[in-house]
Length: 174
Image (cartoon, rainbow, N blue to C red):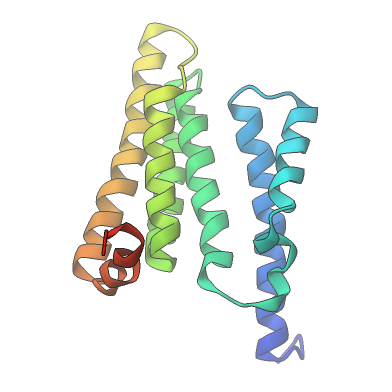
């Protein structure tokens, strides 16, 4: 009651914050993978030009909340992989796990996207630093990816079984 906002307007504030966070996370992810400041800005700008982002106020949906969580997990996974110390690798790994688990329980399709992207990060992005640090960086990024994949599979398999029927028409040949 302190804000005097209705539930609808409070929800809109949450969605606006989530969308702004998504832009910042896209730029951060671009920086982690080696893009310049300008290229990172361009990545965020291109992301902002997609129709789902531009018309975010026309619908209130779970993916509006899950996408920043997915991007946070992917970015943390990439930061873990590029870490130059074991401590930062595991710190970013822990952040990635928390964001991944939050995404999984928020929106299942976003979780599938997140799991695939974390796997791609673990496989493709090179490590930095000394060989001992690189080992921890690789391991922490793989832990994030495996939590994202396994958590998504378990959640969809045991809790959100309706996701199969939702996705089936997009993959079936009938």
